[in-house]
Length: 201
Image (cartoon, rainbow, N blue to C red; front, side, top):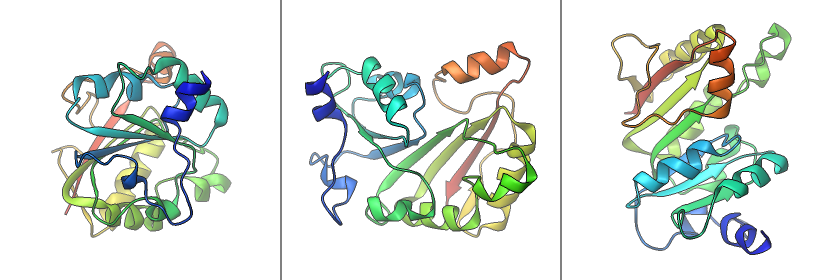
């Protein structure tokens, strides 16, 4: 486990971008909030031509992700233990991400906590700055109110274009959808996910 952690978990020097970790020139994709690691351990296996960063703030969840990763099966995966917010641009070079995946972010349902929600204008502006033009951001949430909030925030941003006729859809927009533990649990409770898909203009 120690060796796996040393291999997978990124330790950045001051002002060092994540992009330096992979020196092979392959397209770079980011998952924000890797949770229990289902997506970051499975999806990259189907896309060995791409590199993936799983960004997760919780040390406990980093350890859970490590239990699902192996150097042999996931050579194109690394984990970054950092909080995702409007400061995300300090970790990546400008216009360097080819795609972003954000699945089931914390909805902070109480009105007094809405300011803690990930999707705010300053975050979307920072994210746009590190995405290549044409790169897509794919989002899912089982929380209907948060889905509406996300759509409203994207609508206000000049940096994105919705790629769905209906901004909120009930089916996955990935070429192969990875069902996470959280999605499975929420479906069983009667809360199916809502999917959104946007393109960086």
